[in-house]
Length: 216
Image 1 (cartoon, rainbow, N blue to C red):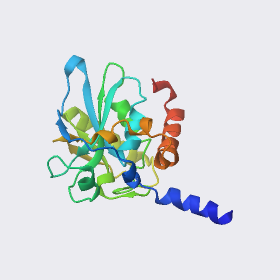
Image 2: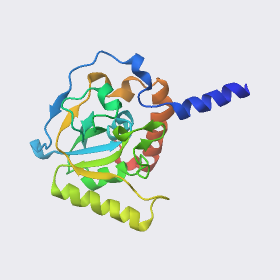
Image 3: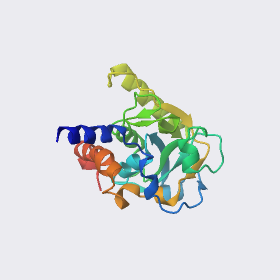
């Protein structure tokens, strides 16, 4: 019994975003999306906070969020595949692109959630997910988003909000590549998979307690 408990604990620690490769569905081609969306007064935000399955699952639950797409940004390779991004050689980060209604939820509020649901003090790492593809990053698509994100980061560091300095990268968004189809809506469609139940679910439960009044 003791051995089985230790094994279970080690399994959680070693579990990473790339674990369920065998469970992947057929890969669809990646598509480049528009950087800015102003249709009907909507706007976009692009964040990276470790595995995009985790971040997507959180933002899908927020009031004012119209859609969330998992994808890749910040690298050099055109139309990268998941396997290429996971190698760390493309320079891309796993990100989510959030289409939101600023009349319902502000960019500031999206940032508040962002810095709460992941660890922004670990460089190129979230738990067992290690590599530049898992870096903490805000890709801004306007100067206002740039200023807001930088001021928020500076404030967190000045106030010592975390035990260690916030290392979140703040960079302009150039291109966003939508990830393969099986990555979209991943948690909702694979809730019983080990990574979902042991890694993503606790993040969602934490989010739900802190941001109960912002949920759909």
